[in-house]
Length: 94
Image (cartoon, rainbow, N blue to C red; front, side):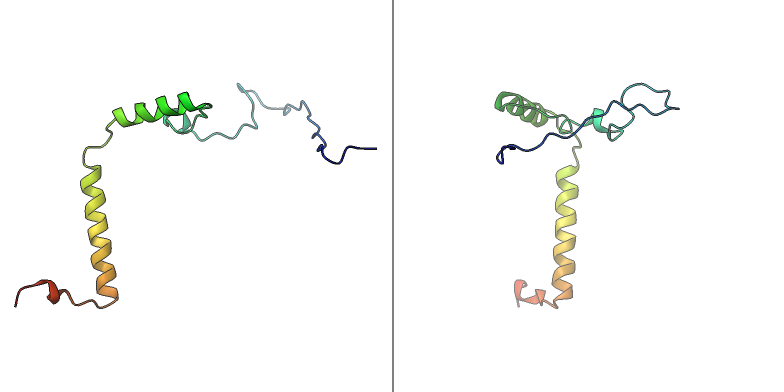
């Protein structure tokens, strides 16, 4: 009789395609830009996650990112206010 608390293990097969002439596993799904991403690799443990977060903080990246972000937010807010027909004259002095 099987133990109801333990799950059955899946069968694993060692299959290689007939005409595959490449390096590594052909069935491994990986995005071609994963090697350039810092978040794509699995960091196990609290210390590794903390060090990768600190490395990301030290890399500034695009300097205009904050400005671009706020411009997009302001444009979206103005479009939203235009859609709901909000009157902006209440903010102006009479």
